[in-house]
Image (tube, rainbow, N blue to C red; front, side, top):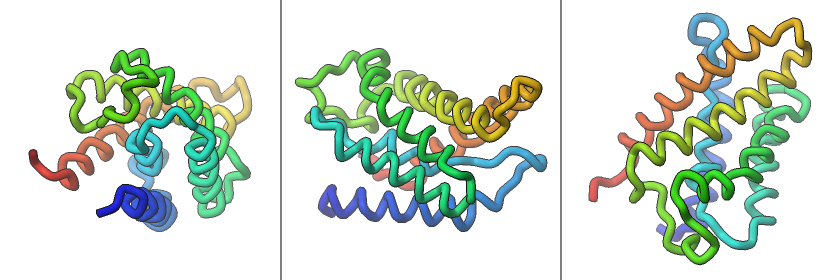
Length: 167
C-alpha cells in the first residue's frame, strides 16, 4: 500500500477509534487510553516539518471535537509533534541525513520503549495539567498522567505486536 494512503487511513482510523471507542473507556473510573498519539510516533521523519506539525494539530483538534475539550488535545499533540525530532536524536542518535532511512519498527525495543514512554508522559502531563488547571490538583494530575501513560503504552505495544507483519 502506498505510504501516503496508509497514513491517511491511520490518521482517520485512530481518530475514529479514539472518538468512538477509547473516549468511552474509563478503567477504574479515571484511566482513559489515548492511543491516537501513535500517529505521531509512526509518522515518517522529514526535514520539512511544517506538514507534520499541521497534521499533529489537526489530529488533536479532531479529538477535541469528539471530546469537547476546548483545544487541550491539539496543544498536547502539537507539543509532542514539535519535540519529536529532539527525542529521536536523543534516543536513536539519528540526524537529518538519517531521516529517510529511519524506521521505528527496525529499532531496538528498549530505545522505542523509552521514546514512546517519554512522548506519552509529556503528552499526558500537558493534557491533564490543562484539564485541571490548578495547583490544588497536582497530585491528581500526576496520578492521571502515570496511570493513563501505562494504559496507553500497553495498548500501543499490543497494537503494534498484533498489526505489524513479522519480518
